Amino acid sequence: MSNLDIQIEEKRRAIHTDAYPMSIGEVINLYVDGDLDIHPEFQRIYRWNQGQKSRLIESILLGIPLPSFFVAQREDGVWDVVDGLQRLSTIFSFLGIYKNENGNIEAPLKLSGTEYLPELDGKYWSEDFNESHLSKELQRSFKREKIDLKIIKKESDEHTKYELFQRLNTFGSSLSDQEVRNCLLIMINKPMYTWLTELAINEHFTSVFPLTAKQVDEQYHVELVLRFLALKDVDIKKVKGGMDIGDFLTKRLKELAADTSFDMNLEGARLIKTFKILDISLGESAFKKYQNSRYLGAFSLSIFEVIGLGVGFNIDDYDEDNPAHLAKICEVSQQLLQNPDFVRNSGSGARASTRLPNNIPLGRVALAI
Image (cartoon, rainbow, N blue to C red; front, side, top):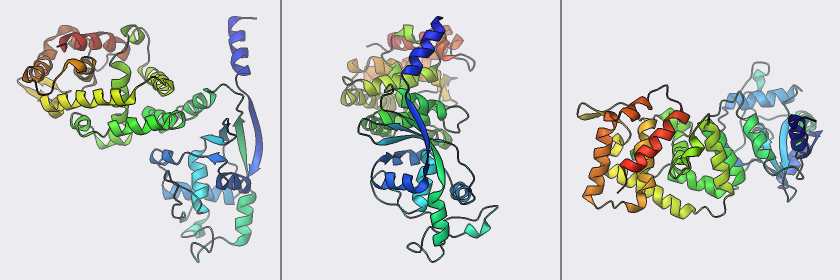
C-alpha cells in the first residue's frame, strides 16, 4: 500500500457520516425543540434578499428538490448546521419561528411574487400573520416535503465540520475569505469572534484605514485585525516559500481559537495601543505612500506590513506621550520609499510569500525603540 493509500485510509476512518431524507415538518420540530443550531449570527454575512427567499419557498411548494443540507452532531447531541444555513433560516422565517442572535423571534417573512407563482406576492404562512396566507392544504404539503440531510457524526474528528464548512463555502462561493473565516470562528469560538469584530471597529483602528464601503461589507477590516494578530510576532520561517496568505490566516485563526493560553485582553490592549499611536502620529496617512513631500494614494498593504506590524512588534516599548516615539514613526514612514529592498518587494505583483519575509523584519528593526 502506497503512502497516499495510507493517508486516504486514515482520513476516511476519521470521518463518520450518515444520510437520510427528513420532512420539513420534522426539521421544524428539531429547531423549535433546540436540537438544531443554525447560528443566527451568520445572517449578517449571508445576504439573501426577499426575492431569493421567495424563490426558495416557491421551489418547495413546487416540489423542486433542494441541494443537500449538511449538519454535524455535537457531543450534546445537537445538530450544528454546516451548510444550508440561509435556506433553513428562510424556511423558519416564513413560518414565523426564526430567532435572531438575541433569541428573539423576528417578524415573519412576507413573500414576493415569483416567475412561476406570481400569486405568492404578499403571502404569509398563516392567518396568524395576515389575511393573505397559504391554505391549510398548502401548509400541510409544504411541511411534508422532504429534504436530504448529510450528517457528520460526533465520532468524527473534531475538525471535520470546520473543514467541510470551509470547503463548501469557499469553492464557487460569493462570500469573501474573511466572511467564511468569521463563520468558522462563530462555530469554533464565538467569544473570540465578538472580540475580533469589536477590535475592527475601534475608533483608532478605523481612523488609519480609509477603506471603501465594499471592503468593509466584505469584512476586510476584520481581516486586517487578523493579519495584525497573526503576523505581528510570527516566526519569519513560517511565511517563506510557497505559503498562501489566505490559507495561512485561516490556519492561524483556528490555532488562536483553540489556544486556551491566548490572552485576548492583553493582545487586544496591544492592538488598540498600536493603532492609537499610529493614529496620533500619522492618522489616515499611516499606510499611504510618502512622495514629493506629501502622502498620496490609497491604503497600501505593503506599508501596513512594515509600519503597522513593526510598531505592533515593538509596542511595549512605545509611549504615546513621548514626542520622540511619534517622530520616529513619521521618519520611518517618510523614508520608506527610499529603501530599495522595500520598493523591490512591494510592487503590485509581489506575492505575500515574497513580501512578508522582507517587510516584517524591516519594520521590526526600523521601528525598534
